[in-house]
Length: 185
Image (cartoon, rainbow, N blue to C red):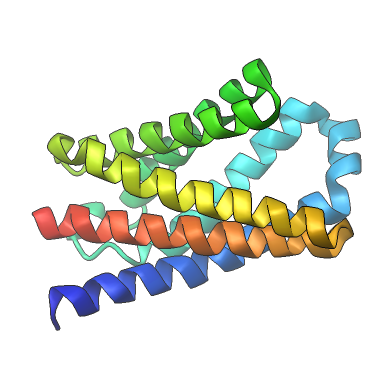
């Protein structure tokens, strides 16, 4: 199998798998956001969604790692740290800056933090700038295209479509990131 075939397979599997994960989590937003905010507070709801992305996303993305050193459950630790750093960067930036500026800075901060955790975990710190750009572009495309679709469609259907699009793009970016980190070894 060629490097290009492996890359395209990682991107495709990451995109499809993470899109399904994202759809499930965005469904809880579409159908249960008010309930979650009332029972868990906004912070508790964001923590619950973060944990759901970690638990479900780790199973999907862990399948892209062929290096025995990073097989499940060890991959879960790295993925959990990477996604938690991503979520913390995103949420902190958004709650401080709000609006569009908060979303853009959050996308950048979250992407950079995730890239740092993954690169350090795989012992490839020199790849941090390249991986951060990968993630920022895929993350921003998924988030902002998904948001535009959500705004155009509205309601629960719009939220579900946002989840699919966000998961497709970010999953593709993470799939590419994992491929490049393993190819470096």
